[in-house]
Length: 207
Ligand SMILES: [Cu+2]
Image 1 (cartoon, rainbow, N blue to C red):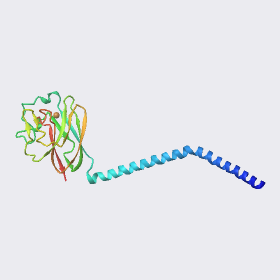
Image 2: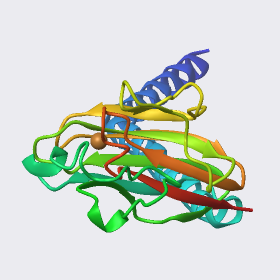
Image 3: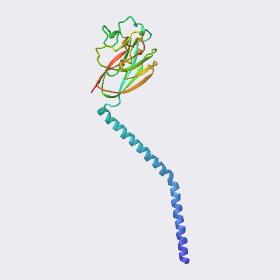
Image 4: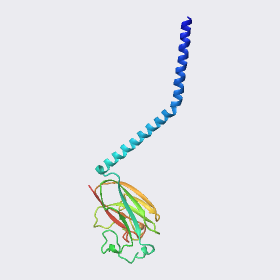
């Protein structure tokens, strides 16, 4: 009995010692375990991010997603509106339009893009004039856009707008994302007078 008691006592002591060792070790080990967990999570997130961006890169050329067209809205300063009413109208398909006379314009960095999701990033590079960018389909590039002479603006409703970045202050920018089928499209500014001063540009979307 005594032996057993001793044994139990001894076992008890050992157990306590073991538990104590394990407990102390657990407490000491805790921060490392937690840090390791964090590191593992961080690494996993980084790997997931990498996989994501690699997949994104692989998808882009195949599906032509995320095509970005940078569009500059520009003018030649304060005198840009001086041609208004004196120069021949320089709207799309206008008879006698002399595009070398333009004092303001809308210039995309590419004029031919593959069909799919396209983001037009418009920047107003003017120093003092508000401009905007409107996107519309062109059924016949030889036919002028519907125009309201009194308002000196394109009839946006009749021209079937596909979206716009409206009225940008000088120096500011905005984006328009659309999904386009193959065809011809026009980008133009519809601040009164600007379209007829030549502020438009054609874009070809290819299959
Ligand atoms: Cu404009």
